[in-house]
Length: 87
View: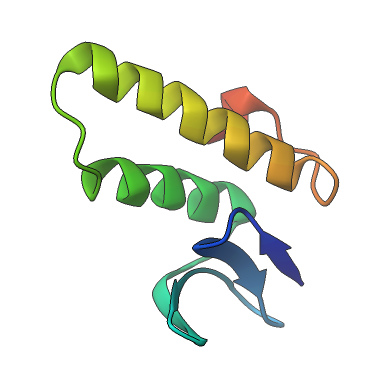
């Protein structure tokens, strides 16, 4: 299963694991492997927030909200995850 989150990130699975992938030019690079889709989703939000250029608490909280909404919208059709499961 491949779940596109945006143009730069996706969550994918194989027969045993979930993985977060980042697009690099025309290829996808694995950021990490996880046992559940919820764990992969949490890592993706954390990774995007920690690698952003955000400055200040208000900006970080706004970005966290935006990332959570984006990921929830991407996952909702494929999985039964709520925002509470991710954050």
